[in-house]
Length: 394
Image (cartoon, rainbow, N blue to C red; front, top):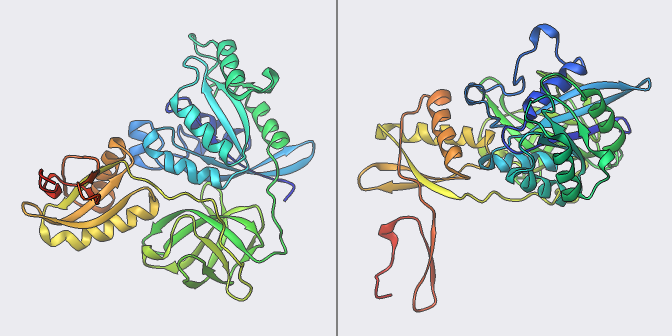
């Protein structure tokens, strides 16, 4: 465990997180030269087309410093505010964070928002001024901004360029030196925090977790504490560019589990995995529930597709835990779902993914927010639709 470092990359949108992650993978020889491409971890077509990160991506790297080999678990996170729930989940699985700031733009809104999230979780922050090769860069000014925001020593701020690779080795050294090793008891009962999951049509649902205490081996009988469901661990392993099976995943590591889970309701992000024979006494705390900001109705164009739409939304929710939905019906559009999103970009991306990944043609109503209506008797109702408003006299 002394040689494990778990860290994420946080920044405002367009400050060069994914490019810097590419360089880290290149300099640690995690990716062969022939496989190198821009935005390597952004494996969704939508991410590449728009040049944004939508999903967090976990990957394991090996780095040797002073003759000692270290295992670095990197989680690359989105920068857009609509995907901030992805960031909060990544932060829960890390001990350190690289705070990236663009040398030409300085500190921006999401930089501060994500930074406070990291500080609340007691992460070690490594500030990095990126894009110092740009003609309009003013690294010294940005360094001053970081010093006044974080209260760190100016020498602690690193300068780098994701494009040219300048300063990348210093960043890797800083991760090894400054980020603390994970704390946990390898002999204690198993406690693993699920921070993400994906649906695979052949293997069922794959859950990604970070082991806080204990260890998990292939063939173990495990239980998910919050849902109470029990499974066999058919395959466990770590996340390199692809999934790499292992016989055992130990304390402090980030890994995956395949146990033939078919229904999406059985896997909840933030749940804790433990052993059936020697269970942990409690689940891991400190995981916040998502709070949707924008609501819209999503209806199938053909009413017969209602159940298919439900199945598609459930599979999407596995991969994007910030999506919420409840069934509703409308006089004009028939049966559909009222979906909650974190923002308008989030809504647009979900629509695109329904079309591309599940071939679902949907009608989306005009997005709105929900209202709390207080009547004269002191009662409160939550209204999602103008038709739900009480009598104006009330």
